[in-house]
Amino acid sequence: MKKKDNIFENLEKIKKECFLKECFHQDENCNDRIIKAHSIQNNRILNEISENGEVLMIGGGSDNSSNFKTSMQRKGRRIATTFTGFCGRHDNDLFMPIEEKNYQVGNKEQEFLFAYRALAKEYHTKTTVGDMFRKMRQYIKAGEYHKLSNIFDENNQPDIAHIQYMADTVTGTLIGQEDAEARLKLFRKRMNNDLDNSNFNEIVTDVIELDEEYHIAVSSITFIERDLNNEVINHLDDLDAQLAPLFVTIFPQEGKTYILLSYFARNKRKYKFIREQILSKSIRMQKVIISNLIVAYFENWVISPIKWNELGTKTHSRIHRYYVKTIAAGDGKRSLLNDKNMNLFC
Image (cartoon, rainbow, N blue to C red; front, side, top):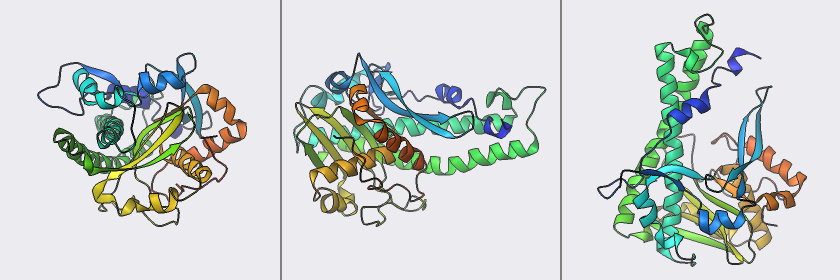
């Protein structure tokens, strides 16, 4: 195997060292203990869709040929979707309206909190990855190449070409990474201020209500690239462009499945296509569009092992192929209707 394929093999180790442990709602009321908070509720959702205490989450990595591969990985519901993003007090107090009560369509506080939690998870993930790449840059500058990969040691140092490749890769990645972090910090400040002032109207939510309980759940934030008419929603290739995030929460509840598509009130014009192009479609097409959205844009979603098996191998292949195809943002390949036969809600 080529050395270049292996030079970042210690990524996961470095990532664990850089794992952010910080309360997203940091203030004088924080207690000292940062906990592993669930981005998708454990007792109300994961407990309902798990099989023997486990759910499936999509994951990826390189195989022996250095090709990117995906698989559905079993996770215990106590650790699935967790992140060290809240102190115990705030995780308990802030989310009480969605932890202790069923969701009601149109409840602005609940819809705000679902979006807020999705943002907190994304902020934690992005900051952790950013810290990881900054640590890698530090190792490269210090000549500590063995910390990047086990193939390097005192007797086997990278040549100039490899060093330049590593430096260019890390520097190039950090340009977009730090831009994303800056935007998320702005959203964090904005939503914490709205939360403190109970200003829940700053989040607008369009809801799809399915008359069946599907054992799949999502909590995530993304930037939709194009609508169903191929019109640009977010210019991801322009670092100066104003971006409009979409917060997506999906969960089953008492015989129904709720799909919450939330955005800032100031971005209503950008996201009017949701009502015009998605909610106006048949229920079947809505399911297909949301399925394409999940696979193309999200990692933080879970599915029941039983439900996954029911989907069948053809659907499994569709999901894995499209996930790999859309792993890089901003290249125009993330279509909301790439596969008209992809349906996770069947």
